Image 1 (cartoon, rainbow, N blue to C red):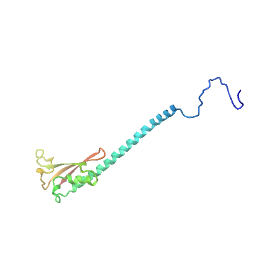
Image 2: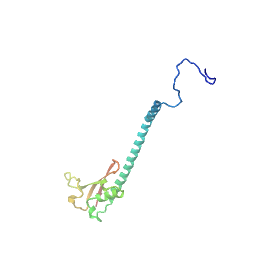
Image 3: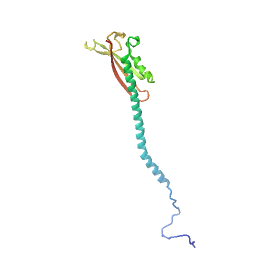
Image 4: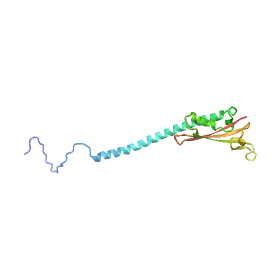
Length: 165
């Protein structure tokens, strides 16, 4: 009946026709992939968030560098050597963006000048670069410089008071 090499044991249980070869089933593989995805997704989100924060931080540092450079150029602008800069100090400020390799439109400049008759005679800053549009000795200006990053949504602003006495 049976050869001597065969070891048949009758356990009374029905025999399975399929023999298990020790591999993984499709369901086991799918469950493993889903569990790995659940673990990896938060890690990827944290990495993405970290990269974004680093990018914004770098952009903020560049904006602040350009802003300080613009304020320095406004402060040191020689009104005597260039009649263009006597009232409107946008040129020296925008030059800071150009030197940094940015478009001049990334900088906006607003001017106000001191008017002793403003606020009922107590004095104050009023809109406009110069009174009546012409430069006068003793002019005091409030120059508001705003710099926006061309790559990230980062904007910084600084006010400079420039006086010629």
